[in-house]
Amino acid sequence: MLGFRSQMPWSAAAPAPAEPVCDAAAAVVAARKGMETPLTAVAEAFEELARRMEADGGELRLGPFGDTCALVSVLFSCLGIAFRFAEIEYVAKVNDLIGAAKSYGTLNDILDKDVENDCVKKQGSHSRNLRRVRLGLGLIKVLFEQFLSTQGCSLYDAATTAYGQVCAPFHSWAVRKAVGAGMYTLPSREQLIVRLNETDCSVQKEMRRYIDASSPIIDYIDNLFLARNISLDW
Image 1 (tube, one colour):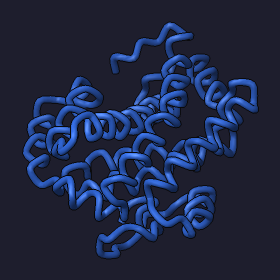
Image 2 (cartoon, one colour; image 1 turned 90 degrees about the horizontal axis):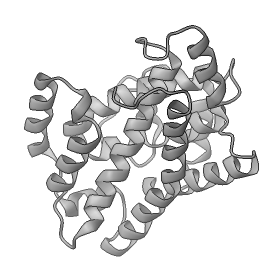
Image 3 (cartoon, helix red, strand yellow; image 1 turned 90 degrees about the vertical axis):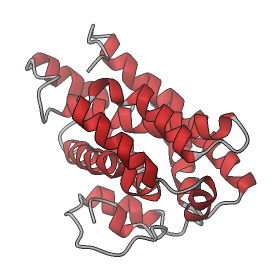
Image 4 (cartoon, helix red, strand yellow; image 1 turned 135 degrees about the horizontal axis):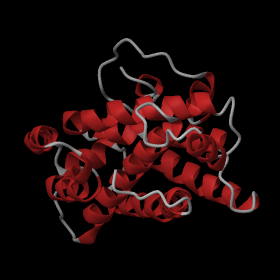
């Protein structure tokens, strides 16, 4: 199992060999093991991250950011094989940022260094990985927004719209086609609620908490790039 998912107590998937996880990621996962549901854990972590950012004068520290983002991988896991592509990429990028926190204090610091080295968009750069993690956060956010938009909205419709808005513009035709085919393997709306260990009522509350708490984080990351005249079309 890739990255953090093998250590998540909520995953119903069969165990598999784990990819090495940074100490920081292992620690935050262990700290959250007492949480009743994965959605609650993620929502509370992002609320805490937003409070930290405000307390730090609007700066977002890389360590807490990486630890919080590590928890989101379990949400991709709950979506099944259709979002396996996103989970694999997301976990790899988060692992990179957690490792980078040993050398950089804030998200601003990694952008400044990559701008200085003219490697912001270079494959494997911390800034590029930050951009990919932000897309992962946005994908879950839009999926939840769509899921809550109408009573009885299918997960297929919500996920298809979210992927089309957030990730499809940056993927090749072959990837888009493969993802489209994989959408038919998504769990039903009811199955997702069960996988998240929620009820129809509680899932709406917790999804809304994630949407509200992640929005300022997503906006902050976007503005880091825009403030340096770096477009978001990549």
